[in-house]
Image (spheres, rainbow, N blue to C red):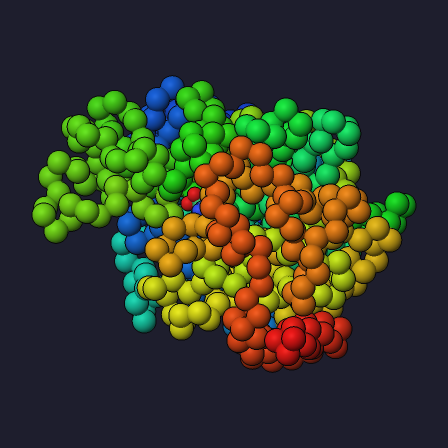
Length: 615
Ligand code: GTP
Ligand code: SPV
Ligand code: MN
């Protein structure tokens, strides 16, 4: 193994614990060679990937990749959090003993990278200098070059991040082995894949995919699952699937920061990238900090909640991204940005890319176009002709610096003070446009009862939400009761508490149309929330929170908004809410050790609804 040492020496890897980790897994997985990666290797790795056909050019400075057709999204069933302590078992974390999972994964990975290069990717999931940096440092070992290229876009990558650690042993050890994607029995009873975070050993072992959160270990596995566990175990912080944005009021010179959770594919990226609606653009400016993960802590000096986005890029849903819905994203993925598209449609003659919703209808001339699986559109059979060209979970990967509304201080290690924490799901009725909550326990309770509609294809009964506490259901790492208590403790320590709110952009009319146009107009309810926090408006108190009056919302330029629709999205349907309270009770009962404050909040809201009904 003198060869490995020579590579590590040449790359300047001085941390002996990192060197041991690399040596151990290089031998075990049987990799033919080891290569240490810095961000500055990007251009060379891109050229190699293009040469090898792993990436195809998609215009100047942009690239296209297809994943294996059986490997197109995170697999929640195959994702496990393991620890050495059974009390970490929760309802959603799919807990297994570390003593069972470590040997199982080790066995699967044995010799599984034979003939391949093992890339060593040292990274940090924080702006350097952040007080949370010790929790943010990791090394991913991966046998797949496109994973490296995604990591360079999504995390800060470089040897310098592991060389001078206060505790050289304190870094997250991530091992990613793709495996033989043709023969893993994906989705069958004989599924070979396993995506395991051994949280109390700070080790991530992912086998059987090279897509997204299954393979980029910095993002979901470290940035969410491991970090949420570390935040709790240390008692210091929260790590959440949250967006983070800033709103500057140019008239008053004040800037506000809003973070919040929405389940996967419910609009975080879109909200973080919004431009002010034209009619308000002269006064307000929205700045992007993050679209998928935020880490939150309280600064004892000023007693405020601070947040950082630990990521370095955005891994956004392509579907419906266009000049009207998200012009910011369109610019962030333009030619010259180094963007990598995955599983969209691709034209091999023009190097163009397309996805559903990029334009109203697919390109009229199908010449050269292939769908996400690589099949020629022009050769589709009658039966296939209406199938989407792009996979519904097709994505773009671009660095934060490409996002035109990126906040000027997005690399500030101190993070930004948080004024509001919002939760939002996809609900076709009941949930108003926005309802504000000023009580901490009621705010946390609201997050814990966040849900999105069961879609027609998924499990679940109509009208019953698939609950997704704080949008963390797929990323929970310890028990939900302890998680709720940790939230109350962390945010409760703030002298200056953020205001909470629940938002919903997805109410529909009987004909199925969205009652609220959404996208850029979503700034309007957020502006109201800031005014409420400042005491400039009072709203209308309801049992489930404070809702805006029509007059309080700044609706300039929304001439097409129907008065009856506005009425609907600002009203509380007490009957539907009372039904929902029954479902919530069942949901909360699933979790042993739910703090009494949360139950009290539930009973307060329920009693308020009963009193309202009696009026
Ligand atoms: P993940 O990256 O999976 O965590 O998703 P996300 O929460 O960042 O969701 P994203 O912003 O990518 O949006 C998902 C889908 O919802 C996209 O197809 C959007 O076009 C759509 N969407 C986002 N905001 C709105 C809105 O305000 N109204 C409507 N109708 N659709 C929206
Ligand atoms: C999500 O699914 O919430 C994502 C995409 O952000 S992935 O990184 O694949 O988990
Ligand atoms: Mn996400």
